[in-house]
Image (cartoon, rainbow, N blue to C red; front, side, top):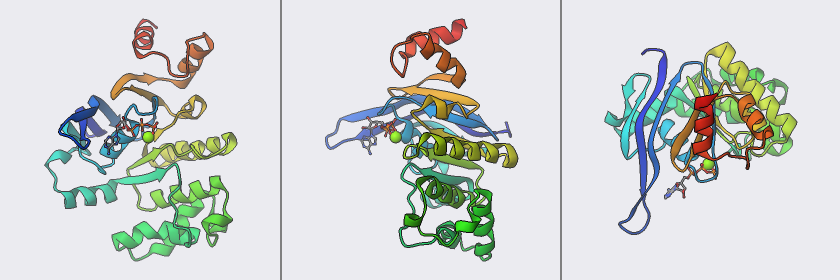
Amino acid sequence: MADEILVLDQVRKAYNVGTSVETEVLHGIDLVMRRGQFLALMGPSGSGKSTLMNIIGLMDRPTGGRYHLDGIDVGKLGDDELSRLRGRLFGFVFQSYNLVPRLTALEQVELPLVYQGVTNRRKRAIAALRQVGLAERMNHRPTQLSGGQQQRVAIARSLVVSPRVILADEPTGALDTQTSHEVMALFAALVDERDITVIFVTHEFDVAQHARRIVRMSDGRVVEDGVTADVVARRLAAGVPGVMPAPASVTGQAAAG
Ligand SMILES: Nc1ncnc2c1ncn2[C@@H]1O[C@H](COP(=O)(O)OP(=O)(O)OP(=O)(O)O)[C@@H](O)[C@H]1O
Ligand SMILES: [Mg+2]
């Protein structure tokens, strides 16, 4: 369907670590995302969230299953085609901002356009910085900005290429609660106003609450899809042990409720 931007069908990922023994870390992921969806990916450390994000963002190839991106079977593409598609469709935001220390905010945001050979870079970079509310800080270097401001520069940098999808792996991991909510509100606005699809990873339920859909992973599998943060919060309040309830019981409860 045209509305479906990402379709993952039984996607697997196995690593060869040193010896001939293969370790599979994604065991058949099914995931469909429509345009303009806003999804939080949750799950314990080591459950495969970053591995999945890397596959979705064409940074890494699956070792099994199929992945259609904007209707294209990416398994059939060569490395050059993959990187062109990556540059055209995705913006990336990282926990550690990944800004270049010596560059100003404006130069950071111009950088992806340099790689794409775009000419009217300055204008587009300023527009992106304005969109994240940082136009008046455009000549500041990272050390002259707060953590939240640095992350907003990083978001402007991801936006400047007009991506269809933003992938953010723990974008609020280094931010305080208040700033985390501001950053999430910014993503929510992008989803609503520009029909961008956003997938972000978080360990915090109150951050996940900004999303319209939550997918929970455990041990390389999707164990729950579509539960909303308030349902999870109610479960926790009802005394379900641990931050991450056991997959089987939760799936059972979701089916019953
Ligand atoms: N390049 C690699 N080679 C071998 N194993 C890897 C590699 N990258 C990740 N893994 C393994 O894959 C599993 C999933 O890792 P991943 O980074 O996706 O987890 P995660 O859910 O993002 O965890 P966290 O919340 O800590 O970031 C882990 O067991 C990890 O050791
Ligand atoms: Mg990770």
